[in-house]
Image (spheres, rainbow, N blue to C red):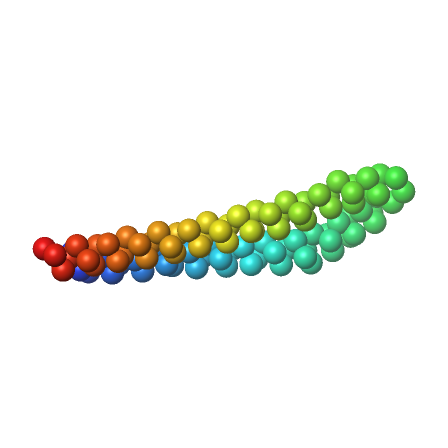
Length: 98
């Protein structure tokens, strides 16, 4: 494998990982918006009374945490893309010098 091929493959892998991270973040947001509230209502309703309300309150704390984690994952994906592009450009530039 030539150095040029390695540069291209490494760059493509980094971009694929960033894409995967973004997809996971989108899934987390979807779960936080719909999955968590629906599940909490379903399970909390089964408890009823004060226990059901307490379960719902406690479980509702998951939503902001999921949103925050998804946001961090998106920022990490952005960093992976940025870093991969810098390294790609540097390696391509170095390749021209040598």
